[in-house]
Image (cartoon, rainbow, N blue to C red; front, side, top):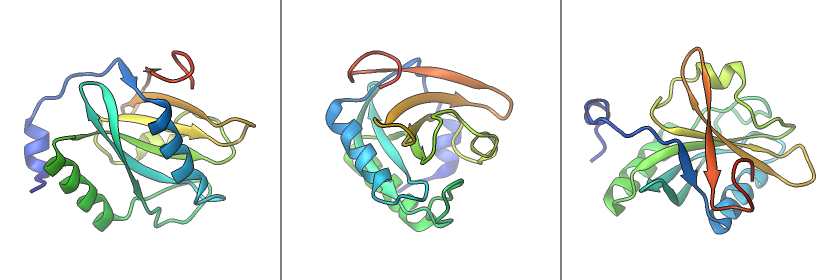
Length: 153
């Protein structure tokens, strides 16, 4: 069963690159596009640096400029990922009007700081995914591999 205290005690490796296949990318983009004009959000199972599963979570704010994940659905996703052996290692959300860069609100959100944050920019013709590590004061880019090219996909 999911135990937040256990997660806090378990050191996790820092991910400099995250692999997102075209199929997973499509699932993420479809999930956030389905809730337009609001921000979409969810968590991602990550195994050995590769995203292996997508868990869309309802945005209880139902707003185009912020999100709060539904707590009950989030806990179910965390438990499901743990049971399947694909631990949650990333969070995703969209910026319906762009850009794919963490906002001040994103940086202030109380989420797992060891997770990679994937932001989907839906403001252009083609959705763009970018990934970051966040602290309360800093933003660190994380390379995305496995898509059309390295970096932004």
